[in-house]
Image: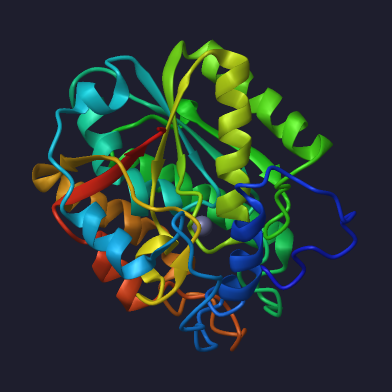
Length: 294
Ligand SMILES: [Zn+2]
């Protein structure tokens, strides 16, 4: 849910890198969640520091493969998911592989997920929130991780903060988790994912990593659905792919556990969110992409 993004927020200059991203997010995200309106074919001016999404996505899909330890730094990972489902869509294979090696990650879900079906009478926000928590528990269980390592930060769905005191407050909570689990790397959504909560998660993770002395590694989710001609305010990507072949059955079970997000489970909201098959296909590949800070 993104329709309320920006309402009531002070017009305040943020970090220059994120300003074009916020504009892009406002433009693109309205067509993505729910995935009903056509996406724009072009956004932003050309510059030496920008690149078409199609070029970046091709770069990502051709990144070299790396061992898990090269991606996680060999320490416990904390996966920060903007919504319940992003941990499985973007990191399901990594979570399963880390768990198989005896270093199960911690998972934190940033928002409460209560606005995916805003007009449903059968699933008002409290019931939907509870359902999405249960789905998240089932998903991480499918990946081999106990629910005691799953944490819900319960920020409002569609309104996670990208700047200001809200970022500091959320980052402090994420940093507390990072310290508690002795985390080496915080995994968060790619800053070019065209969804406000995904950009917010990225900003919050960066701040939390500074507080906790951890690295940040990004994973794309909605980025895979960007129109190829969309111009993004980054020139290139750097990172690695993780071979997730042997974990694909578990990853598919984890994604399937988020039934409210991809099925007709909630049938009384015609405008309700449903993960598009294009995105589900994009993450149903035997590798995951992880992007490093430069
Ligand atoms: Zn999401």
